[in-house]
Image (tube, one colour):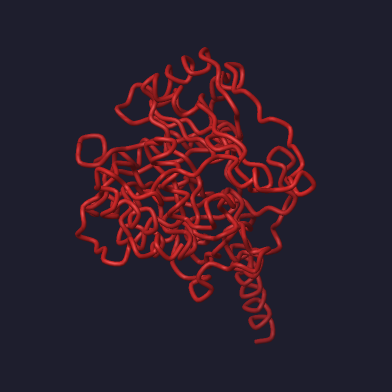
Length: 410
C-alpha cells in the first residue's frame, strides 16, 4: 500500500497521460460537492475530467436542467422548504415520498439547496461534510455553455431517463435536449463530442440521425451477453456502459471471477465504459486492498475497458498520469490481481455464501416499443402552481378584503 502511494509522489497536472481511457464524471465531482451543481462541475474540470455528464430532468415550466433524480427529495433539502407539503406517491416510479422536478418551476427549484449524497453514509462515511449544501443547480443550456468554454474537456454526456413517463406527463425531454444542443451551437462544432446516454433503446433510436455518440447503459449485473443482443445494440448505439460486477464478478465483496463481456462488446467495435468508481474503501472488492487506484488499474490494464465513470475524477486522472505506467516492464504492483486470490486462503467455513448467478443479457432485454407521443396537458392555474403562488393569491385576496373593509368604515 505504501509502495503504491509512492508512485504518485512526484506527479503534477502537466504530466502526460500514460494510459488512454476516458474519464467521465458522475454528476460532476459529486464525491466532493453535491452532484450536478456548478461547484461539482467546476471541480471536475480542474481535477482532469474528460467528459462532463448531465442527467436531464424537466421543470414544470419546461426547462431542462441537470439533476441525478427526478425526485427532488433525493438530491435537495426540499423537505425543509416551503414546498414540503406537496409530497405525493407514484406507483409507476415506485416512489412513496416524492416531490418531482416537474412539480416546480425553474425559479422555484433554483431556490432549493442541493444535498450531497453518499451510498456509504451507513458506514459513517460522509463526503466532504463542509460542502454538504454548497453550489447551485444549473440548466442544461448553462451546462452546455460552460462545458463548451472548458478547453480541457473533450465532450459532454447527456443522460436521458424516463422519457416515456415524462411524455405521459406532457413533457418532451428529447425535444428539449435537441433544442438546447442547437441553441448552444453543438450541432455545428467539432471540438466537443456529444454523448447521449440512456438505458432505454427507444430513447437512443430517437437520436440515430444525429452525429452523436449513443451510449447504451446496462444497469443490471450480467455474466454474459448473446451475439444477437450485441447485434441489436449495434443498431442503435456505439458504446455501452457496464456495472463493475459485469466485468469482475464478486460475492460478498470478494472477487470470484471475470467475465468476457468487455471483450465480446469490443470485438464488435463497441466502446465499453464502466460505472461507478468511488474513493470510499467499502466501494472496492477486498481483493483491491481498499485502494481506488488498484481498482482502476485492474479495470484498465486487466479488463481493457475504454473509460471509467466516477464520482472522483481526480483519482482517475492521477492514476492515468502515473509515470510507472509508461515503463516497458511495469512493476509487480501494477499487475492485475488474481480473481479469487483471497478466497483460496480462506477456510471453507469462512467462505461467503454462494449467490445466484447474474443473468445473461438477451435480445428481448434490449428491444423496446417506440416512445409514446407527448401528451397534451392543460397547464394548472397559478393558484395551484406552488405554495409560493398560493401564498401570493391569498395575500392578494386579503389585501382586497382589507381595502373594502376600510372603505366601508370610512
